[in-house]
Length: 377
Image (cartoon, rainbow, N blue to C red; front, top):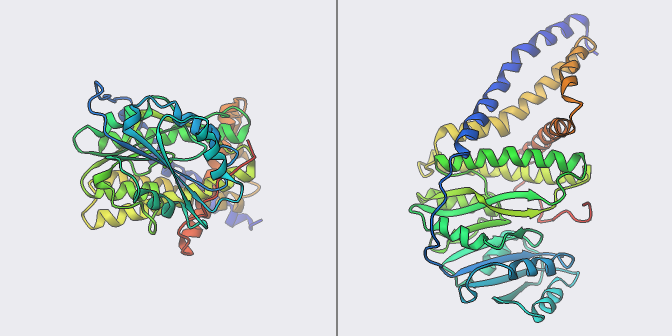
């Protein structure tokens, strides 16, 4: 606890810093308005050949369900292929997949194997060299697509100037507990930002669980500077093409349902977001990124300045104890509602995870290992 004079000075600083929370709210409101005004492509148009890449590592428990999901895609059988690339699985993932396909699979499928795990991006690039499609898509073993996903995605890619599209994430266990509700609330805010940015030009974050790229623009998946999904989309954007998150592309999976899994997922995603932003800023400074500085600065504020501001406010609150305790009363009106409680918990923990991700990035961490959480929900 601090001396009385020091505590009072810290307490006086708290109200002065609170207005700094206003810019993110204004940006969110702007993006919310933009995200509501989507014009979906009309008609079916051409049906290009599509290659869907599914990287796996120890996915024996979900791979059969994933293959059934892909088998239900409504797309011409001779216009779609699946490339399943396994990276050093020790649980028989590839054997389970072969057995499932042997019982019937409507599309052409090829199995590729890496003897050891070298990272998701390298697995994707191995499959990319074998892909024959005019459009290349990526998905995760636990991500379930809707039957019309491919049809809808290629329709967007047929629009002039569009080089890649990604979709929204919906959780199968969204209402399970406070952790899943917190992540569900965050996802809805996240998609508002990305779809709003897509209306302006391009979104700054991509979802590898559902992503489609025009093959002639895709030299390789990002392996070094940023995550494979966001980094790859930024390279396509740097060529002058738009990379969009669109409302009618949806994939479903499970949200982390324990505190440990929640923190791990949020820290990994936070690090990947920061690495993507760092690459975006570099491309913008080189004059190669058509996304406006306003969008970039807003994202830097959200993912860099805001966590540091939260840390500062927390320190001031602690320095001001016990005089700062009445400030906690500000949260009391929000506590009776379960959804609001989850959003508050999600905000505080997500901000802490972003701070940890920032620390990891400052220490030179490039990626958190390709490791999916399992068994927690």
